[in-house]
Image (cartoon, rainbow, N blue to C red):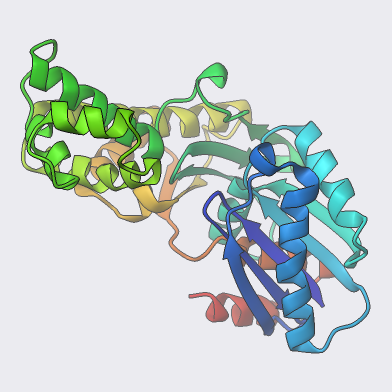
Length: 321
């Protein structure tokens, strides 16, 4: 048996997997944010979910493997610290910890072959990882502006606000965002919205709803919104092509796995531009959107470590479709 963990910024999924690929128990909890609450507290919250699935499955001793793919495990030092904390709980005989983008990558790659490919996740944030021949890895720190990042749902929401404010007061190009953004919050004007946000009358998390609004405004033909979607497409294609280049994969057919809420929504303007740009920059890349829950990737990794049979992979994939 193995524990598969996908801990994202907004939710955490834990599954107990049998050697034959059967899902024996699952549990879901809140987001995993060690930078906010500390490593000990974050793993302690995870322990509540692990205990729940072990109890539901009637497991008392350690299982064979923990495969934990975690948001905010962006640097090797963070992975090492998190792995040590998880190991201290004695849940399994071996523990693997990685950034949660690797779970997306594994979910999109074929089974029982050398894992080679690149994944780009564009959800609340944005990240990219890749695996090449011989176990070579490409990755980015993905910790915000200080590591050169642009995009993701949270960033796009802030950009929509910024451009709406400038369109409203004349510093920027005219845009329907100046009307649609305050309307989303039930307000008539941008000055009303700016005041409400500044004084804390609107919870910060409500801003994330501006991301689908931005895509809707772009689809209506608004030039400002379309430019933001185009910039996002360029960043996604750039991440993927740079990772492919680092791994020496530009000249061979290679899966490029696309996931996260923004990409999984398949907004035509974004999706079409990403595929077009990839075709230009990495003609042999094979883009594929994966919408299966990332915990599937953790479960598949656990089966990899166990040397599972083909039927086990098919079974666990069927459980998470």
